[in-house]
Length: 389
Image (cartoon, rainbow, N blue to C red; front, side, top):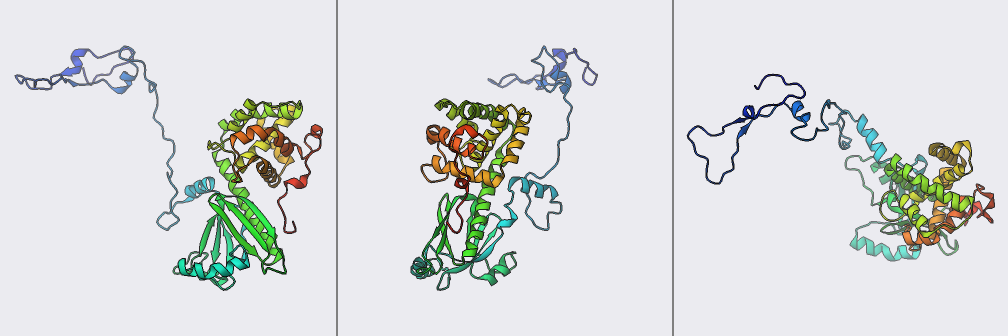
């Protein structure tokens, strides 16, 4: 009867499970299905009763408590007292660029001085941008943003977000940038003859620098932010499952391309493309090319039969020690330059299959890893242009 204990193998009789729902003498409405009032045995007995249904996976499963944490990051306001876990979550999900990219200074917010004179009145009328006669703005890099301020006083007052403080005139998200270009004009004809072009997914951003010593500072700072954005975006999505799945593909390509020197078929290149498309968007960006080059170098260590190459993690560590991250990014940009035929920072599958085997050998083997490649590309090919180029 209900209330008594039942052990494994015991079941309730049907007479104990059903009780009439309606009072005696009351007829069931026409067309209504019979719906008896049912008393079921305790859940542990139902989980382990094979005559009723297959044994549930919840049999003998003990409830446990995983963890209690914030599901989404909390705003940085005083009403949230405990933000330690939230800060760690923000750091792991969002990340931050290198601190050496925190630079600021006056630049010319135009493609040239002639364009600045023509656009000054038009932007003042339609966009209410109060530039000076030379369109000089105080520009800074704050986190992932490239910000423009009216002058240095507004920057120093409003950069910390004080109440009623001036605000920046423009924000540019450098995480959407994929390339950088430097042009040097005639110093006798132009006031600011160094023009830097930041290539973004939605268009280009131009600004000119007057002092030659500041050109390299701006160029290296923006380059570092672009590199950190691409690398952290891939590290955030990469998992151990992805690494284990693509490691055999890297070993096969390294053995065929670098060790035996034989041709690589289209199917093998297609498999390699999908193995390193970490974010599943159908294209390879600079961060994914960095992972590809690094793991191909690690696969070469494996194919050489050294002790460091017996496991994937130790082989990758050996590849990291041979090539710093800045040089790795330069090689990825070099590889993308020849594989990206649309000049939008993305390598398509067809271009990778057709040209990938040729330029992978140059990008991976130019650092002296494989002396038998024949005519390696010089190391200067992987350097970004400097102020004097």
